[in-house]
Length: 132
Image 1 (spheres, helix red, strand yellow):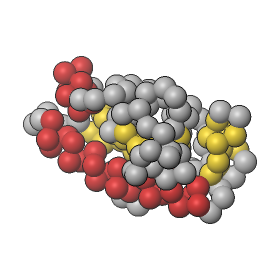
Image 2 (cartoon, rainbow, N blue to C red; image 1 turned 60 degrees about the horizontal axis):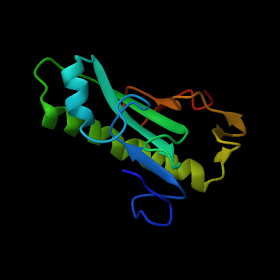
Image 3 (spheres, rainbow, N blue to C red; image 1 turned 180 degrees about the vertical axis):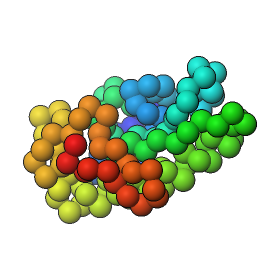
Image 4 (cartoon, helix red, strand yellow; image 1 turned 90 degrees about the vertical axis):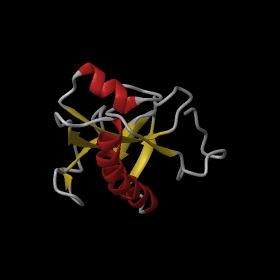
């Protein structure tokens, strides 16, 4: 999962998404690891690319509940739905000039985002307080 902007067709201007609430579970098999740990929620993170595996500054995270009947595939499908919402959101913010990587931190409208990035709302298509 180590990516560089020039080498990865799934990146946009140095952004990358991962099926995990980073920094929790970087790398592979994130859904299995969340289930094995008994986590009550899981999700996806869009982050800037860095030299560290899934270590770049977070831009946005989307959370989903882990349901008692979940297996890897059902959890992965729910997370993927959120990935398809948050990655275009981050790309739009970056393309509009509102989002940038500045001194190693993600900034939206020149305000530093928290370490976990902005929280994507529980209703599909919303973002909760994009300035935090």
